[in-house]
Length: 339
Ligand SMILES: Cc1ncc(C[n+]2csc(CCOP(=O)(O)OP(=O)(O)O)c2C)c(N)n1
Ligand SMILES: [Mg+2]
Image 1 (tube, protein in one colour):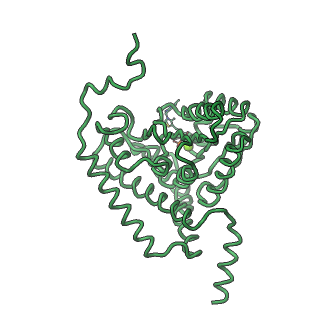
Image 2 (spheres, protein in one colour; image 1 turned 90 degrees about the vertical axis):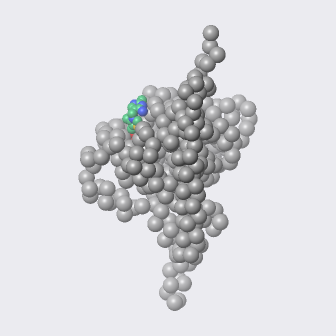
Image 3 (cartoon, helix red, strand yellow; image 1 turned 180 degrees about the vertical axis):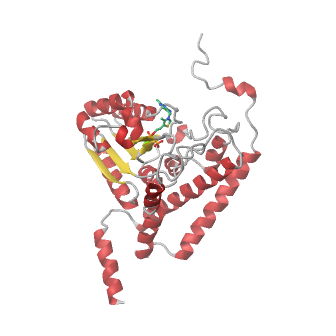
């Protein structure tokens, strides 16, 4: 008994962080919601309930949920194709996610875009474009706007390590460095860009080192360690709000499944996949919460059953929602009133 007490107090000291138990439980809730929703969407795609494809982010949840959790409503996020967790955490409802995935007429873009292009204007989540790293440019633009207006808001641009090879990505970070913009660049290094390994993507070993060229800090962290992701992102957000400029955070993580649901991902070894499954961020965090007596088995079951009910309602809602009228294809299109 005495030994157990000693062990617990040592753990508390080791994991030093500024977050309350309530905050950690909320993060846990969003992680589970993202995981359960993602797995459910994969199943529905395989049952041909919606068209296109689905970009699963299972395994990467901590890298999207934690940064978004730390933001205020008016802060901006530029999500990419694998940021379902950031979108849910920032406030996009599960019904908004499912209607987007099902391309129904009541989705934000009235069925025009890709299944995984979630967004909502009033909470500053911009619907992404397919062009890799385009959201980096948009986040930089939003950060510039905040600086010009003198607002204390910040912008986060999410992208994968593959996105860092694009010209616009470099131009954005250079611009942010010159103008000391309140931007946080979150690189999810999952070691693959479709079938291209990270070793063929860049000459530097650490993608975070690229920040040096633009005059601001870059850090590489374990993206599957929830508390580390929360702490590092909070420091970057605090720096940005204080006018000290941008930060690039490289989060090491792994996508469990193919690039999208139509990719068998046979370019990876089973050993590599098995290794990363052992580093699953959710059970790791759950163990920490249980060791610290922040989460109990009963509470966990309650959280999961509440989420499952919400997911079911969101799926039913999308399946019952009509498609947009064909005329809608011509509304809200850039240049609509041109000429
Ligand atoms: C400019 C451009 N080139 C290629 C593609 C096709 N494409 C979509 S996602 C992707 C891989 C991106 O890899 P990474 O940035 O590492 O993100 P991840 O998919 O691993 O999350 C590619 C090549 C695209 N959408 N845009
Ligand atoms: Mg990648």
